[in-house]
Each structure stands twice: as C-alpha cells, then as structure tokens.
Image (tube, rainbow, N blue to C red):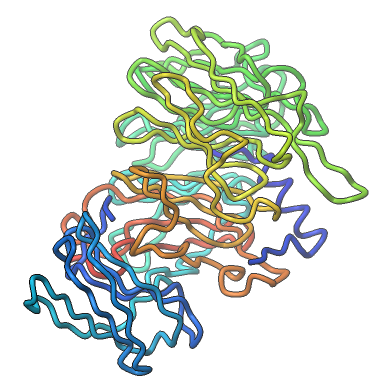
Length: 499
C-alpha cells in the first residue's frame, strides 16, 4: 500500500532541515453512554466539546450544558438526528452538567467528566526494525514489514502489550515494503530493492519461495527455493494484492534519481505455483497502491514531484499527472483509466497513495504524498469528487506533510499524518473531518503535542483489528507504526467506552 519513495523524500528532507514545522459516529464506536465531553489532550486552555451522538436527545429538545467549575453555561437545541455539541474552552479536569428538557419535562440530568483522545493512544508498545513500512493484521496477529531490517515481525495482539512471537526473514538488501495474504498460512511480500516477491509461510515463519528478476545477484538465503524470471519482471516492486488465485505486484519503475524511467507496470504471478504469468504496462508513472473490487483491480499511478534544492521546496511534476488504471483480473488487461488532473492553485497536492475503497466498493479515498489531505473518487462512474483542486483537507496545505496510510471501517476513515504525528478521522457518509466524538486527530507522537518541535515520530502505517471491540476482543482496535522512532502503537477508537 505504501511507496517508499515519498516516505524517504519526506523523512530525509525533514531530518536534513531539522524542520518541516506545522502551524497551527459509527464504525466501531460503542459508547456506554451517548453523551460525552471530549478534548484532544489534557490542559487548561483546551477545546472541549460536550455533545451527544445521534439519537442521544430528542430532536428539538433543549440542552443546557454547564461547566460546573467555571459556571459557564451554553444552551442549544437537539439536532434533527438527535445530536448536539456545544464547544467550551477550559480545563480538562472540569466537570459538566448536562440537562435535557423536552416538552417542559427534564428527561436527562447528568454530570460528566472529560474524555481525552490522547488517553486512547498507547505509544512505544514494541521496538520495530529499521524503516518499518507496513503493518497488516490477520486474525489476532499483526505483521510489521521492516524495510532496512529485511524482516517481518509477528505480534500476538491478544497480549497487552502485543507480544513479539517471531520474525520472518527475507534475503539481505531486499527492502520488503508491503505484504498481502493468500490465506491464514501464506502471504506474499514485495521486495522493493530486491526486485523480487517472497512467498512466506506465516505459520512456520519461513520464506518458502523467492520469485526474483534474473541478474539481480546477491544471496537468496534464507528462502527455501528460488524462481528466477527473465526480462523486466520487477522494477522497484512496491505493493502487492492477492485475488482470484493471482498475485498482483505494482512496480514504480524509477531511475537512480527516483524519477520515472517510464510508465509503471503490474507483474502478475500464479498464487498456486508462484510462476510468473505476465506484466501489464500502466498508463502512467510510478504505479503503487491497489484496491480490488470484484473482478476489477484499481491501480494508482502516483505521478512524480519536483524538488528545488535552493528553496527546499517540493512541487507536483506536471509532466507526470496521476491517474488510476482499471484492470480486468479475468483477462489481465487495462480496460479503463481515471485521470486525476493536477491543480495549479494547489502545487503540492499530488502523489495520491494509498487507495482504499469504502466497504460497499463505491468510493475510493487516497492519501497524498506532500500534504495532509485526501482525494475521493467514485469508482463506479470514474468521477473525481474531491480532486487536487478541492481535496478533503486534514492539515494546512501550506505545510509539508504526508498522508501516509488510510484504513476504513464501516463509515469511519482513519488516516495517518506522518509529519504531524496524528491519526485523523473522517466520516465517509458526509466527509466531515473530525466528527464528534473525534473532535481532533488522535495525538500519536511528539509533534502532536508540540507542533513546533524539530523532532517527530513519523506516524506511518496503520491497520484495524477485525471484529467488534468489546465483543470479539478487548483492548485497542487500531495499531500503527512510526517510521522515524520505529515503534508500535495503538488506538482505542471506542475511547475506552466499549462494553
């Protein structure tokens, strides 16, 4: 799902400049109460929203909220969906009295404290390998792909904190970057520098087969068998997807300066015998993320960026506009393309990646490589609803950031913000950013608490644990990795209120 190019460009630039400063319900939320007071983090001058989830109060009812410690009172009316959310600025140690009156009768009179989004985040749960690139969850295990360590760590999520139960090793200098599962036993990993794909047995934790481009050189140990394929079979493989008995691998196809050497392409393997089938040339450059819906595979052509060494500024490269190719997985051919025009008004809104589809397969959202924002595409009609001219903004477009990864559960989208150490939330029903009770992004690293810091953790990739929190498992439901501090973290999106 991730491209190492944007990760390295962003990380190395920020480290070299010691800057990159920032200024400035549904889907698993199972509260024990429908009325909450919420703040991002502890403090005395924090924004506090005292609100109710849809259905918490009768529409049109009168809601009176009083900060008991200051005496400040705000009165509002229940919305048509039964929600409300007056905003206060105050101390997160304060308590609030909420009185709901309907038809002259008091139907609710409660006192509540403040729930902190920061309390739902746990950092530094485990040390990861060098340059962690991807985290995926299968069942009750999390798999972390470590690029420069050439391994995949396996964590048991039933333990608190997650317990490292094993490591799967791929050949040296492979730079594994993405993992996708065939079933509960086998997974495939794209090796970005190794020009190869490794078939792993995640139960025995061994590399069973390495499928590698001829002439690559280097050792293939510890993989048990090797299949060498002649020709341009892999060139900077970056993402892998498994569907209909086949393995699809996107290839950036970049030169030594990380510029497009031509169009990207997709390598296709037989998942049963690991044999190479064919390649499909993409219609654009820097092919990366994929989403599979039925018999259609959507492959993102990232495009490229330009870097001015004199000003230390990135801009979109208009010679390589992004797009999405539609591949028929029955015929392994591209049958359509969705162009994503660049915007002169937003010169840093580009490099769309990754692409994640809503559960019904209707809409696709992509992160962006230089800013904290999202694009939205109607995958059925090909319409770019929120393009580079009107992206869904998560952080200031004037500041360098990276929407490194996104994941969707039901109607909630979670997005990691690499430069500001945050995990933002979007309601995909209406594309509202930070919907109540998620009134701000989850603070998940140094810069979230100190926006002016020259240091940051680099919140990179995240994965959502399958099942219902409080029903199928206890504890956090989202796990994330940091690219700079190389740590495993977690988020309890129920805010600790799951039954």
